[in-house]
Length: 163
Image (cartoon, rainbow, N blue to C red):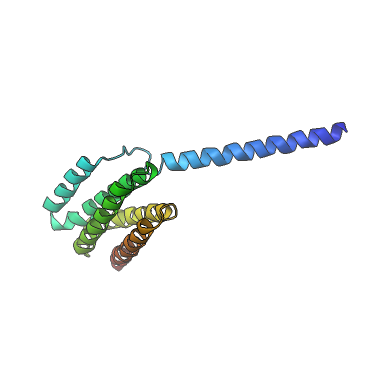
């Protein structure tokens, strides 16, 4: 009887440890989703970043638009988490428009192309995660945006490997 209750408590402690580890890893993942030193960007800051990217030298535009794309994705994630589907849908439309700008500005002589590719990979992963939790028309719009973003990522990746 004593040996049996000892093994039960060990099993309970192991289960509690596993549960705590899982909860900690999920909270750490969501806390670091934007990056460890990155403050969440608001819509006004993202507009300014987009204006700066528009005015930048052509060689710098690809990476700058990719930063805007990443910020918009994080903003959409916060809007979806808050249940603000109307603003999230508008942000998804803006993501699509900025992805087109990334595609237009990507060229073999663009600066920070590898950094842009890595940021695009992260952005695509975040949007894929978000697509799992949205429903209905938001899901269809998200899938269209993801397909567009995949094409842009493939294009930038091919430019990185062409160097």
